[in-house]
Amino acid sequence: MTVDMSNILCTKSHEYLVEKDDILTIGITDFAVEQLGDIVFVELPEVGAAFEKGEVFGTIESVKAASELYLPVSGKIVEINENTQLKPEIINEDCFGEGWLVKVAEYNSEDYIEAMHYDQYKDFLELEEEEEE
Image (cartoon, rainbow, N blue to C red; front, side, top):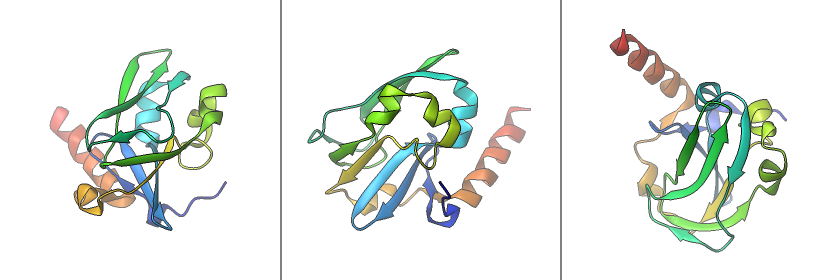
């Protein structure tokens, strides 16, 4: 699946958001996938669950570590990607396409005002790396 990277917004906590028809598709970035390694398990919330910005909405486990997933907006889960629970490796293969995690409606667009376009996110990662050195 080809993804238009210009439509992708990323957070400092390595989630991405894509807005289309008043629905946000949310997943984890390629950087997060790289850091986790081979993903072996995903736990997602039930459809209809509502979350506040920053709340844990699921868990993702890899051969290296387990990580909590934080929702970058307040909103209501309207769809989960069941394929990621059946075949978690699709997140490694196509995190921005078939490996999305949840879709959210009734969200507050003010919540992701600090999100960066993908190019800015890549710059942010480079700065973070330089600061660690």
